Image 1 (tube, rainbow, N blue to C red):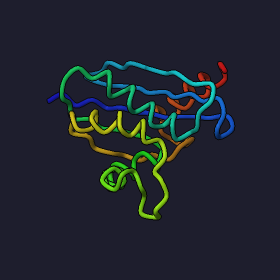
Image 2: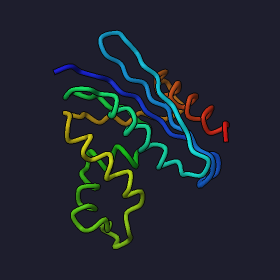
Image 3: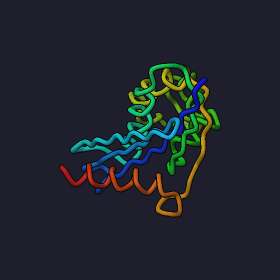
Image 4: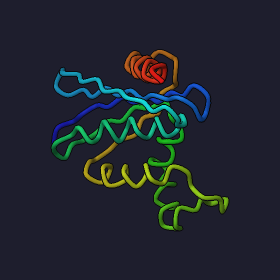
Length: 144
């Protein structure tokens, strides 16, 4: 299987407010940048959208090294929280409804197609690819 490295980030000016997302896919020395945004959204929705859009680019089953500065995304997936929320009808352990279920419903089948390894990185720090994703996300949010 191919190993693809994906970096993602989301940004929002106000929460909710105008937002953007950015992603970088790397394979075999080749990089592809993706970005987009929405006029009215939240930071977490943009974080999820970045991962969804990046995974949709993969045309075959891959080993995916996913890097994100979003604890929301990384913890929900790596710690399995999202699978519990779904099993309980999208209710979290605190009995409150899980948010962004429409995006989680899109993301989970994509995750299931690949062998995904999750990596949390500190935002606005030393990771050049995460910083580039942030730049793209912020630029997209400014279009609205």
